[in-house]
Length: 339
Image 1 (cartoon, rainbow, N blue to C red):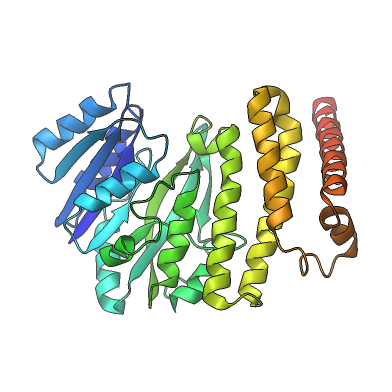
Image 2: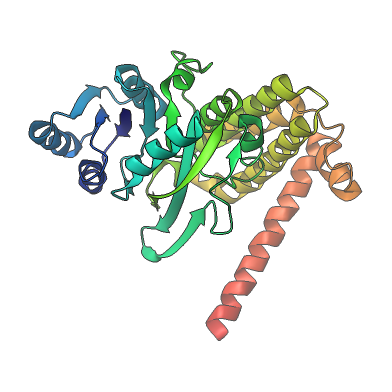
């Protein structure tokens, strides 16, 4: 009934816990497809052990792709079930997750059922948050359009659960060369917009935040998120209309991300190679020039002047924001030390 798909790359420390959490599900009618993305540690050996002891596990190995999207899409292509649940290979789920999600899907006739993510810090497992938070009504039933607006500009709902395979199969990024960082966030929004009913279930997915994970490393790939932001803005513009409130929200979010990326580039420029630094700057400039700034910050004249007038002024303002932020951070550190 459910195909669990997992891309895996160099996760020997975590994948056993991940796969055991699937093996121990109270719901038994599942298959788990793992695509080993050219791991160089013992990840593949652990996967092989699980496949040997339970035929519901299957695996494939591909050369390292540099993106979780490619092995994830590969796993989906092999899935036999009508429902897909994606997992990250360093996460795990409670034993009743599949049972609860499937039961909720049948009861509500939903196309997507999302659960509650418990986001915890690897260095301090007691430091955690929930998405959605505890005040969110998990009994809600939404349209896909309503649900997608709970992901912009901030993820009020999580992105893990079960989704009908047919939605995975009609993504515009399927079988393309698109594999930049965070493109899965675009895929999620596109599937939401094509869903009629989105439901929720209070089952727990344990999402591990690792300081060493690809998504938390600052590199040239980090700036590729701007491409996803642009794709998302275009998606909402096409779906809701070029002058719609939804498109404006996406544009404002995208502009905020352009500003944030420029400030971050000032902070980390010494850690990048010269060609990477230039590429990141050109990427930011390209997206700044491209974005329609007409209605952005229309209620904030100061931001409108300093961030949208021209690129030179944008860079100067971003630099001063970086300087002020650095100074405040140092003052805070000194205050902590003195107390």
